[in-house]
Image (cartoon, rainbow, N blue to C red; front, side, top):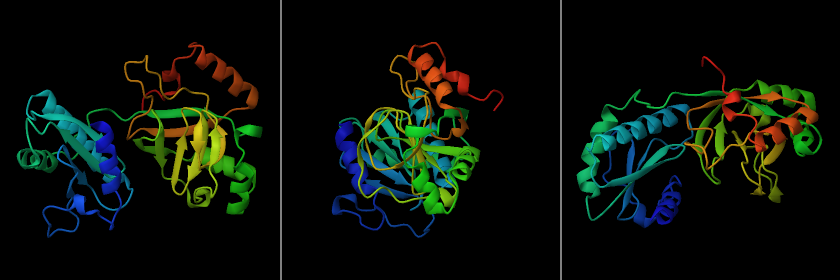
Length: 277
């Protein structure tokens, strides 16, 4: 069921090219109002605007938290789970137990009162990154495209406090924004077959970290030794939507030391969480 829901969500996420099965019901007079979209007979999506913005992220997080609280209180029987994205929230439900017609008024009431209802505290992270040598194969090209020196790109990237918008693509993979304009580049025309785990990458206004080795078409600026996903942890994904991330440059030797210690379980990933924030 989750796989089918993801396919429908992806189909419904393309602005201005709605497939017939993703009809908007009903039409609204307020253009700023959230859109309610069908996603098959087991889900519906609440969409907050056409662009990736902090305001949309806040709205998604607030409604997600409000629904989670309502589910815990037994107020949404039949709801199975929710799936937050950059600018929308999909609600999956058991069609034998409930329906969109029953759920939408309840979710609308939660939406009307959800502002500021984020349940989880925002975490601030300062993650190590190595920009040297093979860690950043696209660093020089990114600098040349921006008309900057490599050291300037390193300084600009590491000085930027990024916001986690969502997790996806791979377990624990954080989509983070917003990059300075000088570092924004379109995706590579030819993706790499293998991107090393820990690679810190940029594409358009976003920055991401690959938790696992995989194919990828983003530009690689450096590598981070911190494990972003561990199924043995109570919460496997280290980062969460709404978190803030800033990178701290480290030399190659320190990167190797941290990577070995992290893989051996000798360093708690919480070490990199900024205290008091």
